[in-house]
Amino acid sequence: DDLPYTVPVLWVDLDPEEDWLATVQITQPQSFWINQVRRDTGASSRIRALHGLERSIHENVASGLEVSVSAINALRSVLHDKQVFYRVRMEAASSLTSLGVQGLQFLTEFYKGFNFDNITNKPKANDFEDL
Image (cartoon, one colour):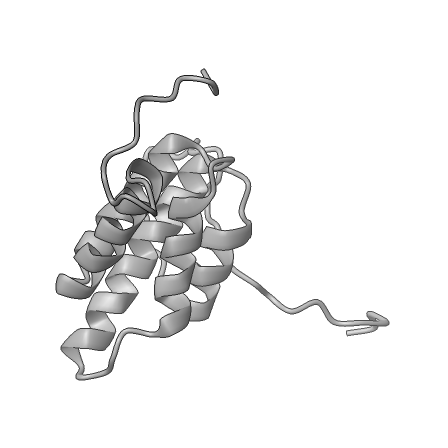
């Protein structure tokens, strides 16, 4: 109560080291999941956040709401970031597929952006420079 400032809660992560032998399902607002997907540094925490975000998206769609643009942008930003652990990027791609046709369009654009020449629209030659 006597703190000179307040710190907003951006997300909740329970058992980040996965020490507990238990299955825990956290329910939090979609903005919390988005913050955790974008800002958390742990791969397992980000994967749990992606699963939570996907559940949240499905709940919104089931109740008649549209998929939020910020949720889609969070999934796309994780997918495009080469610094993110590959397994986290795979989960983001999987979450995009659950969006139906819209998600598949994003994945097709992603694939074409990395594997096709923009001018000729033909597949690029293999490039192993970053290995």
